[in-house]
Every structure is written in structure tokens, then in C-alpha cells.
Amino acid sequence: MSSKGAVLRVVRAQRLIATLIRRHRKPFFVAVAGASVYATCTVLSSMAIRRVVDDVLKPRFEDGSVANATILGSLFLVVIIGLVRAAGVVVRRSFAGIAEWRAAGSLAGDVVQRISSQPVTWLSRKSTGDVVARLSTDTEAAVSVLAPLPFASSVVVMLAVAAVLMILTDVVMGLIALVLLPLVLLLNLLYQARVDHHYQDAQRELGNLSSAVHESFDGVTVVKAFGAEERESVRLSRVAGRLRNARIELVRLRATFEAILDALPSLGIIVLLLVGALRIESADLSVGELTSFVYLFTLIAFPLRLIGYALSELPHSQAGLDRVEELLAEPLEDQPKITVASNGVAIALGGVSVGGILTGVDLVVAPGERVAIVGPTGSGKSTLVRVLCGTLAIDDGTVELKDGGAAAVFQEPFLFAQTIRHNLTMGRRLTDEQLWSALELSKADSFVRDLAGGLETVVGERGVGLSGGQRQRLALARAVLAGRSILILDDTTSALDPTTEADIVDALMNFSPQTTFVIVASRPSTIALAERVVFLVDGKVVDTGGHLDLMARNASYRGMIEAFEVDREA
Image (cartoon, rainbow, N blue to C red; front, top):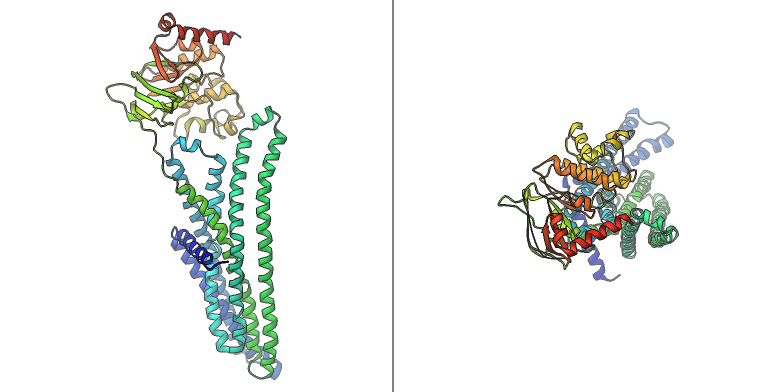
């Protein structure tokens, strides 16, 4: 290990600790104070033991009697030191835990804030599993050093007080006892140097495994449909194998490290006993003083391991913090710019262009107007919907919406793995009457009433317990309950039969004359319900007008609609 590398690790460790402590100083330093009380009482307890041996036990064996006051005084001293020491332990553990989990909470809060500040386009480029790993396992790893740190720091106090006490008691024995400290510190530094990159590898592979498992569970239907269970299991096994290998190497190094730490104090006690026996024989040391040395050394042996434990957690915490800070350091991307429409319009697009998909789209929709977006596959309909919903940034042009936003229902409706009520209200306070009214509009009231739990039925992850049509109707009811003046439907009734689709769309378009509707549709019966059709081809608006007018004057539009009819009949 080069001196430059050692200095760099020390600097990184200092920065890590300072970063974590800065979040919640008070509970951390209360924990340090409790640990310092424990450390001081640990050293004082050895003095109490020396008094018991020299003033109570030895006179009792040599003289046959000891004064009751001496016995009671010695016992009182041992009990008081023990109680104060126990109080120090309680304070240290309690406030160390508070500091650790508060730091984890605030760090996770920063991650959530950063994620929520990024646009949807940023999230769409990220692996969901990796983002979840940075929010959960990485934040927990980052703060793992905080719990042992107060105890480890108090060991320094303990060693300082013990060193002074040992040297004052007997110089030779004190020097022998204290020679262990640099050996332990050197051992810890060597261990940290070797284990650092293994922790980085293990934390990275844990994120990879989280991503792979999340993706596999998300696509379980596709995996089963194509009979790819075995191939998927092999893929996950390989990722898990890399994580296992990294963890095994960590365990191997840690086991070696802890075995040596166990051996050093035991060897030290043997040396102290041998040298102490000679010092007693030469009358340079009393039996009580030797007992005090061995007792103190035994008490210090475990705290010395806490230094090692804290240092061994540093690479683990550093790996977690590095991954969290990597996400926090990503620059905030611009949110899609949507301005509030003026001049009494509901929607106004001016020269909107998006990545070669949409080119110079101009569109004006009046309040309360019913507009259908129609076009062949790949014409940019869904892209246009994402622009209107504010989930996709434009390269050029302007987007204006009344009230600055719209409620939308997409092709694949998403339901949370909670109750139907939660999926409809999204945390808002709505009455049952409002919920059933929206369900009636979307023709979902009958099947919800038939469910055993009604509105309290848990639908499962992504609404797995419901059919595609049922999920679409619940998503439509949710959009209605949003109370927005603009409602956008991106081919959201495709899982319904034509009659039900027409009934629902007609009911939605007529329940509120003030609501503006933009619907992406391919069924002629649904398109015919709109007041105006916007015909989109290759990312451009090539024509607009009533459905019958376009059928009469636009051959391309007529051919596409007829093709839709043929496809439906087939």
C-alpha cells in the first residue's frame, strides 16, 4: 500500500464521516458522550477491581478478616461505576441508532427529491431496479459506519485514560500492554486497503441484481409466453453468482482479519501474566495491580475490535455513498416547458418538433372541443400525447395548455398494488358518491360492485387481478376524478369491445361541456364521436376537419379508415 494511497483513503474516510455527521450532529455527539462515559467507567472499573483485590480479598486470605466498612465501600464503588457504565451504554446505543437512521432517512430523502426533480424522460432512461437500489440498499450501506463510530471513537478515550493509568501503575507492564495498539491499527489499515475494492464490486453487483430481478418480474408474462423461464433463470444466476463471489471474498478477508484480532488480545494477556508474575515476585507489582492490568486488558480487547469493525465498515459505507452521490451529482434536466394558454384557447401548439418524430406541428383546440388524433402507425400520435401531458420535452416550438396541465389515460394504464379506492383518489379526500359517479361514467361501477371488497378490493401489482378492459375503465374513472379541464385519452379503450368503447367515450364527452377532449383512436365509430379530426402523417398535421368531411375529400384518410374497418372485421 503506497503512502499516497493511504493518505487518499484517510481523506476519503474523513469526508465520508463528516458528510454523514453533518446531517444530524446532535444525536451523534450525544452518542459519543455516552460512549465516552462508558469508556471512562471501563477504566475506572479496573481500579475498583484492584481495590477489591488488594483491600478485601488479599487481607481476607492473609489476615483472616476485613472491616465491613471496607467491604461495603468497595462494593459500593463497583456498583456505582457499573450503573454509570450501563447508562453510558444505553445512551450510546440509543443515540447512535437515532443518528444512523435519521441520516439514512435524510439521505434517502435527498435521493427521492432528486429523482422527483428529474423529468420523466430521465427516468425512462434509467433502470428501475438500479434507482430503487440507490434509494434503499445504497443509502443503508452509506450510513452503516455511523452506529459503531461513537463506540470506536470512545475507544480512543479509553485507551488514552488506560495508557496513563497503566504507565503510572507500572511502566514495564504499561508499555507491554500498549504495544498492542499500533499492531491493531496497522492490521486495520492493511485490511481496509485490501477490502476496499471488494466492497465497491459487491455494492455494484447488488445494484445489478436488483435491476435484473425487477426487470424479470416486470416482464414475467413475456418470459412465460416465450418459454424463456430457464434462460431467464440462467441470466439471473450469473448476476447472483458475481454478487456471491464478491461477498465470499469479503467474508474470507473479514474472517481472517477478525481471527487475528481475536488472537492478539489473548497473546497479550499471556504475556502480561508471565511478566506480571515476575514483577510480583520482585515486589514491583501487587496482585491487585496485576489483576487490574489483566482485567483492563480484557475489557479493552473487545472495544479494540470495534475500531476494526468501524474501519471495516468504512469501505462498505464509502461504496454506498459513492453510488448515492453519483445519482445526486447528475445534472437536473430541463422539465418540458408548458405555459398557461391565453386568448381563450384550451390547447395551442406552435411549430412543435420532437426528435424527428414530430415536425412543425401547429394545433389549436378551443375549450370544450372534442378532438380525435388519427394517423397510421408511427405517425407520432403517442409522441404528441406525451408532449401534451408534459412528459416529453420538445426540441422546438411552444406548448400552451389551459390551467397549465391535463389529465391523461395512456395505452397501458398503471394501477398501484393497493385498493381500488386508493387508485381512484390518489391520496385525495373524495366522497364515495364522487367515486361511484366516476365509475358509472367509465362503465366500471358494475364490476366493482361485484367484487367482494368493492372499493376496498386490493387489485395486486399493476392491477394484475383485473382484466385489461377493467384496468382501462378504472384508469378512465381516475382521470375524470382529477378534475382537469383537459382530458387526453391515448387509445385507452382498445381493450374494450366497440359498443362498450363507444358508450364510454360518448358518456365521457358529454358529462361536462366545459371539458376539452383529445382522444387518439383507430375505431371509426369512436372517431365519428369527435367534433374535429386531426389527421397526422409522418409527424405532420396534413389535414383537419370533421370525420365525414375528411372521408369525402381526403383519399389517404379514407383509405386508412377503410383499412381500419377491414382489420376490425378480420
